[in-house]
Amino acid sequence: MSAKIKISGFYDEVSTDLKIQLELMKKLGESYICPRNVNGRNISSYTAEEFERDIKPELDRYGAKFSSIGSPIGKIALDDEEGYARQLKQLAELVKICEIMDCKYIRIFSFIVNPDGNYDEYFPKVIKKLQGFKDVVAGHDVILIHENEKKIYGDIPSRCRQIYDALGDEQFKLAFDASNFIQCSADARKAYGELKDYCVYYHIKDCSPEKVEVPVGTGEGGYREMIDDLINNRGYEGFFTLEPHTGKYAALKNAFNVLCPITALIPPVKNFHKVFRRIDKAYGISLFGKVSREQVFVWQYEGLKKIIAQVTE
Image (cartoon, rainbow, N blue to C red; front, top):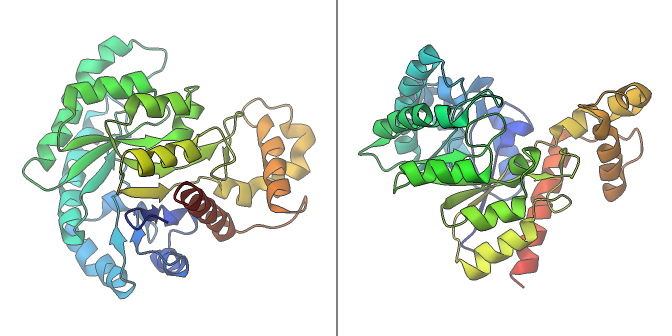
């Protein structure tokens, strides 16, 4: 693996217990995590004082560092003024936590909107509120990274680019999530081509054509081509952060097998059984074989390492 690439992860997909997260990090031989849910609380709910007192000592015991803070900042309704005021205060605390941890990235979103509404009308308010977040980090060595996500304003490549054109600078960049684009019916490979000049951070989350998350390298995310380009053509030296979202496979696959005759009739979930069986076959798991969340996360990690090795041979 390229020594310049660092692998991190949303280890809370295995457990919200920080010790369990850190044990897995060490087991994999890594030293970075992306905190989201920490000991049963979202990272944004901690004040810097609480974090330094209650969380940092455990991180220090494991030699853990932060790749970014996986905050929910901006993942509120566009018209939620009370929530926005609260998040401005939370972001100020997260900036302090970044400084405590020598971390420079905070993940944000661009507000939940009604997809049937007028995006031209949403845009000025989105930019004004995102500028409010930028004002909080001004003067600090912190970069806000906007993640494309379902149901927010910046869900598809064109709107991500629109946001970047309005706000992009040394403290505002883009994070790239191929699976989220696929789930918004966007071509992930084309999205990468359109946005790679503005992205500084990459989530590793793959997705099937049926819009169900699958192990990295087995979906439509185009990760092998993307990672090849990033390492060999663009000299990328940043983070690949595992956010597989395949814990639902570990938790739900057997239930879907039992309920298949019923779930096959429900449009939102009818593809899960088919995709889960595809994963079973790829990894040699029996129909009702049990798989832990940790095992699924390890599959993701090994899949990412394999891709990196292939493109750096």
